[in-house]
Every structure is written in structure tokens, then in C-alpha cells.
Image (cartoon, rainbow, N blue to C red; front, top):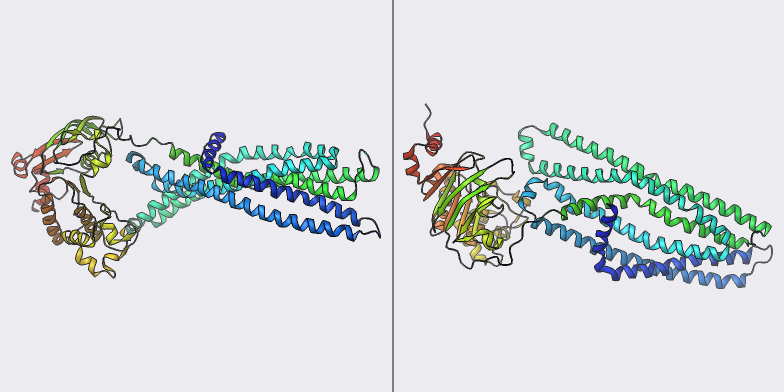
Length: 582
């Protein structure tokens, strides 16, 4: 699994090979100059080690050379950091953009079936963790490999015997780190999954805070949060504990290496066997032994970030691998005009195979018809809207617009035919003008104001501090629910589509304003095919066709008078709303 994740991460790095090569060259030069330092220090030690025979003249050139190597090494260390940062952040930018594009290409079935907070956590938190791990990992990889090779060569030139001792003992730290990494990886995977669960719970709780307070659910909410938070704490502690064992363990092994170098080097200096060493060479070798083991320490020190990055990358790639919405056919029709004739033939649909919902739905709607869809909660009214807009595809049967199967149309072309106002209004953080012009960004100020007047929103907009330039908080939090819905209605009126879908479009508006809005809708619906979902049956009396649904089937259809005359299911619904109390 880790190898697969690594290969996929490297595929995102490939476009920035130039930065990778720049980082590699900088690492080679930086480490080479750094490793040249102990040689100079050893030579300087040999110049002053003899009693009463300090060679000051010989030391000065060494000091100058040492200073130059430090300066040049610092320059290339900066270049290494620059290249690795550029490579990392550009790679992470691409990952995050691909993840966001993926969200827009996923079918609504996936969006509806997964916690939104968890998806947000994958795009934000998990990508950040990949960034940290990638940045740390690449830096340590380049400097580590060059350091190991460089110190090995320098040590061989001083004492092959002691070099063999260092090389034989040091890999023990790798075995220790690999063993601990296998144990801790499972904990990091669980930690990232639990963090996504926690983000999802926070997101839905903040979004429904009014409901939480209304039902005095604060304590239960905090208890549920605490339960998830405790699980995150426990798996986080285990992950950190296991990963933290690697660094002191490898440092212990490396201390053994340093001790072995000091003992063997001292024996060589005193006895001259198996090869003579000067005090300066022993000093240099001790420095190289520490430099040789340093990459192992650095890798184990950042193993937490690397493990977290791999766990986050797995979650991110799981999102990227989700099946996308079936793409439009290359031969997909992009309608240039729309008459508004809609025909549904023998349509079957269910969200889950085991639960049948829409069964054998047939209806024919002509240009300019006003079609009302009524029925009890859960009967499939909103499902019909989803099918008309092709948010979901039918299991069997077909829907045709102007004689063309909507599955043969481009989705953008089909959806551009409809203007839709939902019961749940959606606004984004921006000005009122930008929100109204969401469907027509190029609209003029006069057109925006005309749409607002038609929606009876102009008067309340002008009472706001900055009028049409008033900035709306996230999801319209600084204006009332009714005002939000008026802005959504204005948005549709500005687009002026050939067909309309009104799903409880006036449910959050006061009765007086609803009368005005209904008149505006009536003007707007003239000559346009309209689908109206309503619970208040008084709003659909003028509909040309009323579809009465129950348990996924259209059980009655006709005009208001015809359905009342039948004295069937619709008549009972209507009378239940308007019957006088006994």
C-alpha cells in the first residue's frame, strides 16, 4: 500500500523535475562543503597538538578556507530549501485543485451519502499533512543520501578498518526504525480517519446550532463530541508514542557507533595498529561518524510527519479514486433552443436497489404547462426534481425534452434550460449583487435591480447599510431566511430560463409578500413549462396539471377541480388543510 501511495505522490512531483534536480545539485554541493569542514578541523588540530609548537602561519589559511566553505554551503542550503519548497507547494497545490475538481465531478449520490466535514478535512487537513511529510521527506532524502555517501568516502580515506565498524553497526538503527514504523502506521491511519469524523461532526453541529439550542441538546452534543475526541486522543497518543520510540532508539545505536570509533581510534593512535592515526584524524573521524549517523536520526525524527502524510495521502487518493459522474457522450446534444415539452415514459428509479421508489411513471407535459407535484412527505416529489435535472439517472425508462432523451443531452445544456428555486436557499460569502448575478455574472446593475424588484427584494436591499454592495455572511447568516429566499428568487428571475422548477419556493416568506411573489411567478411562468412542488395546496390551484404522488407512484392527475370532483387522495389532502375545526 505504501509503495503504491509513494508512486502516486511521485507522479504529482514529476512536472517539477527541474526543482527536484536543483534541490539535488544544491544538496550535493552543500553536503560536500559541509563534509570538507572536519578535514580542515583535523588539519588545524594537528597544527596545534604538539606542545610549544603551534603553527599559526599554517592555521590562518585553514581558517580562511573554512570560512569560505561555510558561506558557500549556506548559499546552497538556501537554494536547497527554495527548490524543495517550490516543488512541495506546487505539488500540493495541484493535489488540492484535483481534489476540489473531483468534488465537482462526483455524482450527488456520493455527496449525499458522505459527511461533508470529512470531505472538507480530506481537501484541507489531509493535503496539509501530505505537504508537511513531502517537504520533510524530500529534504531529508536528498541531504541524507548525499551525506551517507560523502561521509563513507571521507572515512575510507582516513581509516578503512574503522569505516567497516561504522557501516556494520549503523544499519541496526534502520531495522529498529522500520520495525517501529510498521507498528505505528496503523495508528496514523486510524488517527486521520477519526480526525475526518470529528471534522464532519463539528461541521454539522455548527450548521445546526439553532436546532441544538432549541432542543437543549448542548450536553448530549458535547458528550458525542467528547466520545469522538477521546478516540482521537487515544489513537493519537498511540501513534505518537510508537513513532517517538524510533528517534531515541536510533540515537542509542548511534552512540554505540561513536563510542566504538573513539575506542578503536585511540588504540590506532597509541599502537599504530592496524594503521597509524593522528589526533586530528581521530577528531575528523568522530565528526564523520556523527555525520554518517545523522541522516538516520533525521529520518526517524520526522517519521511522524511521514507516517501521517502517507495515511492522509491514502484518504486523499481514496477520494480521487471514487467513480465520477458518467461523462457526457461526445455526441451529446447541446440544445440551442427549448420549447419546453417534457415527456416521461415508463420510468423506474430507486436510490438503493433493495428499496423501490418511483415505479412506472408516465406523464406528458406541453409547452407552457404549469405542473404541480403534491403528496405526503417522502413520496418522491424531490426525487422527480432530481431526475428532471439529471442529478440522478433513471434505472429504467426515459425522460425527453422536446423529443430528445435527456441522457443524450449535455448536462450543462439540460440544466441551463431550468431555473430552480429550492426550499433551502443557498447564498455564498459575497455582495448581494454577486449573489443575484450568480447565473449571469455579466448582468448590468440595472438588470440586477430589475430582477430584485420583480422578486420584491429591492426594498429590503436598499435598507441595508451598503445596498447591493452589502456583503453577505457565509450562507446568508446576516439576513433573515425569508430575505435569503427572495434573493434566490431574484437570481432565477435574472437568468430568465425557458423552464422553471419551484420546490417550496415561498415556504419561508410571509403571506403578504408571498402574494406579490406569486404574482411575479405567474408573470414569469407565462409561456414557460413549470414544475411546482408545494405542500400548501392553495398555491397550486391554477396549475394546468396536478400530479398526486404517494409511495413513489402517481396515483392521480388532473386539474384542481377535476381532482376535487374525484373525491380521492388529493381531495382528502386538500380538505385536511382547509377543513374547519369541529
